[in-house]
Length: 215
Image (cartoon, rainbow, N blue to C red; front, side, top):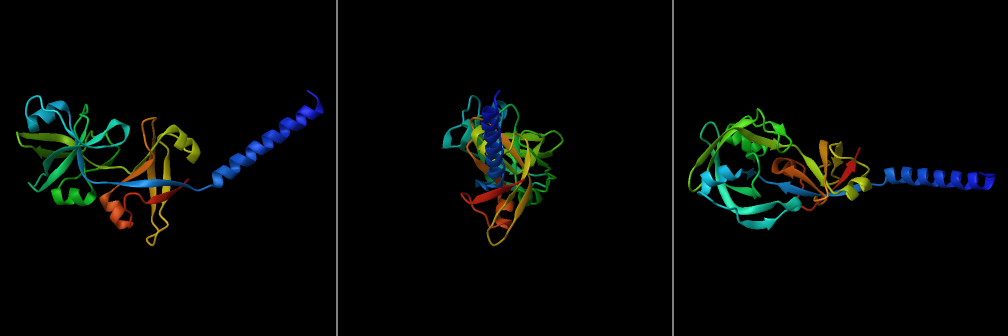
């Protein structure tokens, strides 16, 4: 390799490193979706609540093949405190779970832990009441861990990887920083950060607001 080629390659490497460093300094913003309490059900539990052979009906399409169903249930805590009209999200899953805010958990009287969706082992018990029956979950009620959905291209642009935890800052008058925000990466995802109603209200955030990722 002659000296001219070495010089060209060296220049290309330096330019690439400079671009990478500049990219790191760029702000990356993510839109917010405020997630209200909701329920995921197995087909077995759906049929216990709504009748044999029942199928969910779509109200609104969500990301990743999920949808908000027209169907709602009442959730009941350990002290028989209830919250009505809790939306079911479809399609059906392998395990049933109820996602609530901390305020909801206090109202229901259940010790719901903060968990990633699907991680229900040892979580709080909860009862669900539908038009045709009742389902009691020995475990399954959680407070969803704040997280960001990203497609691979978004993750690359943000400089993050699947399951990485980042901090996210809102630059509004409340000036809130959310730590321990889990990144989830999948081809089916649309870029959006999910927080619950407690977190949104405390930070004066509404669905559609954009927050800045910091690492």
